[in-house]
Amino acid sequence: MIILDANYILRYLLADNEEMYIAAKNTIQNDDCLLVNEVIAEVVYVLLGVYEVPKAEIAEKLTDLIMLDNFVLHEDKHYMIKALQIYQSKNLDFVDCCLCALHEKYKVKTFDKKLIKCLNS
Image (cartoon, rainbow, N blue to C red; front, side, top):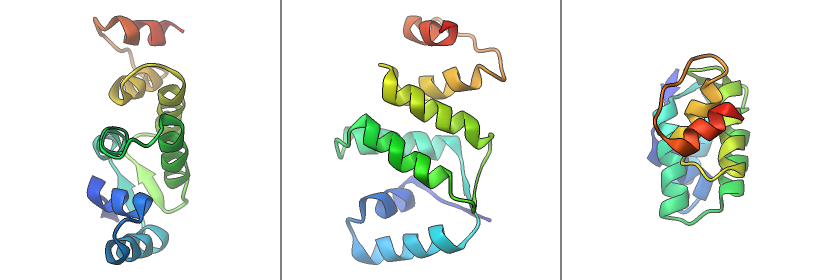
């Protein structure tokens, strides 16, 4: 099992460096990969903040990546996909979207008004 860092995933998604893209593509398509939530959050942050990729495109690209059969997440894939759907449709930062999605399984405590609204919807 290989853990991928944010930079590795970004090179794959952006294909902005041919050598790195080919290496990342080979790993992503051929090896069992573990994605940790923190890395996904970092990828979202960089795609939005640095590369100005629209939220809908970020959600779509990461959902496609997560759905690959050789990818495993610490939490069930369902929660991350739900977090990406919330991210695409609500005005919340990505980590709050993850917490909102995990609310199905865990109790979430917060003072953040926008997150409380998501939790109650």
